[in-house]
Length: 373
Image (cartoon, rainbow, N blue to C red; front, side, top):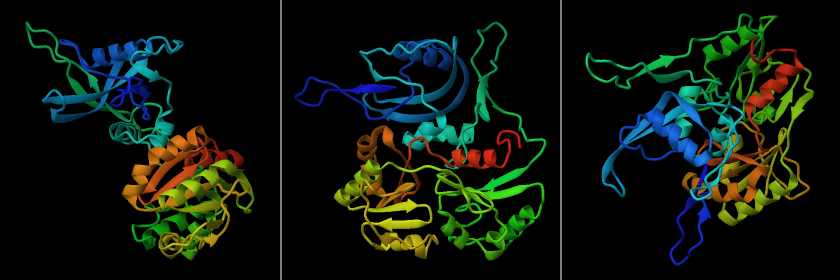
């Protein structure tokens, strides 16, 4: 939901919040976590739910304006009837929608909910969230003789599920095959070469780098054994013959808006057009893409409506980028998605883009069932 913001000083009109959050509120006396979450969700959205599990909580003290301690709990709910229609309370809620878990993690910056998605649902920048929690706390209750049942929560992990047949292995590059200094450990290189040697298993990389940058960063024995892969945050996928089997691009208006936004805020924009990188200005940060991260060295080019780009990087100070991100999100609206893997790089992608999307396209092209193989 998006709540209403209180009117600014001297004004009477409320503005909608720019941030999406979960329905919620204060518990009434005697309510359990589950009862409170279900009631607040119904009051704000019109969706009747029942509590299933507790996913996480934080504990704060001296909470303004009450001056009290606070337990904020995230509850997993299930709708009583999946066919229910949203009926948001217009007095309290400015907007209400169903929000895909992967899209929320990619587009929103809520620290607690992002942590829940990563820790409980196994989501990351390269792996989509599980359909059900991998871990959660369920109410198993404790009953003392002669006393009411107490809601008592115990951790429960989902049983591991492994495919009976493995036909493909996908691996990220930065932070997986490469360490923090962008080096590949010999043991990792040997493991990749061994995986690639299996006739019935296809090993491929799925990375935010472009193809040229990824291959340049990896040892020769690894890069020579790879057959195709997924690059530029899942926006370009190649088969074993180097043919593109999947590609998505930003529209020209978004590219132009990013360039103007970068110029206004002092950020260097870098466009990724497959294996070509170009920018409107050469700076130490643009040079670092080649010198530290092995990407092709960016060249000067025009970032206007006629430009071609799979994604845009805005390079700058980490705090400045974080502060400017909400304004850029509002400027681009639904025409693009924003994500951050390195604090000094704000990435602009086509809406809904992810490495997972590229992996699925790669697997579909090679006749691999991504969900079971």
